[in-house]
Image 1 (cartoon, helix red, strand yellow):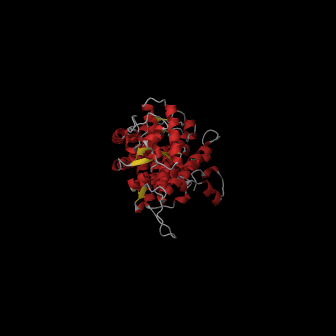
Image 2 (tube, helix red, strand yellow):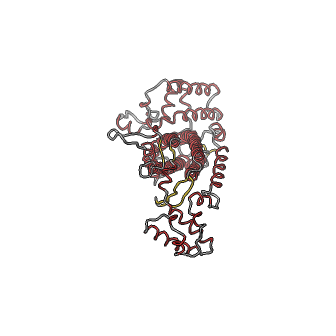
Image 3 (tube, helix red, strand yellow):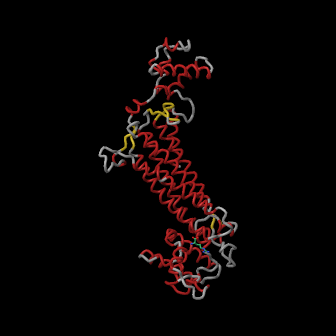
Length: 455
Ligand code: ARG
């Protein structure tokens, strides 16, 4: 049965095409929001004089019964979409009064109303998950506060840093991810209902009342824009993709750092897997999956962007394709955040192994700074140290292994104090800038992060 079947005479359904047209298998997730919005709409119809007090009561009770019925299990596939499902079931339950609920209402506005209500709850949930993960990051940073770690650029050892500084970098990426979700949440504060199919409705609905009932700040300003707009979904999909992109980089780091070649991180057994063939294997599958699933999110974002491109105003059925990407993206990023949080708790830096692999030439910049301290212009100092590095590496020596006499061949300002500079701890403690890896600043950074999490 179709709610619009009277438009045709003896229309013979082609079951294949009916199924092709239907979105019920993809939009059933909006059921809760559809009920919530229908309740508010019934109240607004009552306020507008369309429903009597008694009819309103019958409809509200009827909607309760629909919820009950769906909970007990129905075959949803016979309905076109979640909106027709609720309306049809309501009419089944309460008869003719149920036929008044759709007065002045269009699925074009229902769908965006439901999506905004649903997404609001889920984005708030995502923000909570991000906060939990940020809490874990702080914990890992504090537990390994003093561990010295090689900082990389170009995947080449660059300068020594604190492991805590490295891992806290994730905190700030997640903080930006949170801000992006908050921005996406802001896009959900205007109420679509009352826009009708595209032109508004002759029913004198109090849209401010409707907005309040459904937790929106205010009604939208233009009914045509309202039923055409899906940018609020694109904003959310972008925010979600960024979370995945950020996590993929750290997942990649942990995969490399836990390899035999690096050996910097030990992964607990429960976040590792093995091989069906090679009994010795300890694989970082979960981090690989987190890295690998990132492609999906970019596709979800991309698919909706392409769907919207060049669409004529206002509603077009193409827009029904918005459900799959947003539902999948939200559900899957929730899983990824939970998985990443669990796995992050199971990584442990191994200081001795890290120390073994730390390249002493990471202190070359500190040597330049030492020469600058002796009054040599930076560019010149850079050149002197460049020559020292070249010579030492040619002779197979570490920086510290060069004697004062050898160093003086490059510049006569060298004295014994240079050996104090050639030290990873000193290099780290020597950093003077806010936001640097200096332990004092890292402590401040963690303090600030804690405050942010509390607020
Ligand atoms: N299932 C539809 C969607 O998700 C609801 C809106 C249908 N509107 C219409 N005029 N056919 O887009």
